[in-house]
Image (cartoon, rainbow, N blue to C red; front, side, top):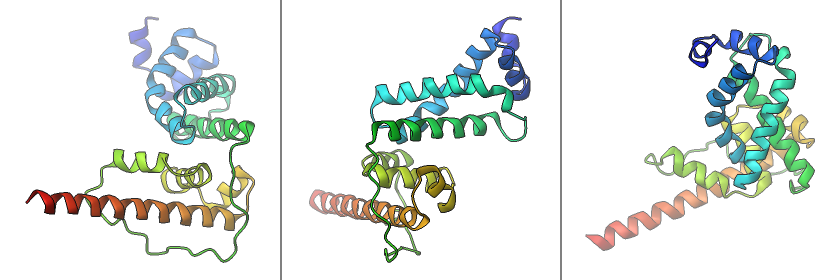
Length: 193
């Protein structure tokens, strides 16, 4: 079967072909999902070469475990969980994830709003990438991936309240940066008039 014929396969059929260790199917699987999974890995692991390593090891894990894909839900969603777990495992191995101690009385921002309606997604992602590692990890898992604080606490082996305080602080830092950027833009517009 030529590579073009593989491209017409459903996700379930592609997964089955990968289960049979079909090299062409695995190549197509990689080519189809790598452009989506690399930015995901980069959100957790800032170094380009490390993010690539995480992605490659994630694909290797996916090929090992492809027979566990049940066909329920998207193949991309199934692979996404593997990539996130690989990224978190990488961070744990490096022992660079310093999450703050459990803070029961952290101030939570229930009315979270972005100061600017004109923020581009790419700009926001750049700001998220500049967050301290613990804040960035919890923010990614909660705000972008949709994990609950309970799930985050289990994944990161922290308490739910620590997850909540990390998220609150990440949001606070992002709001502070957005406000700073907005003030900078306003002052430039005023100076140019």
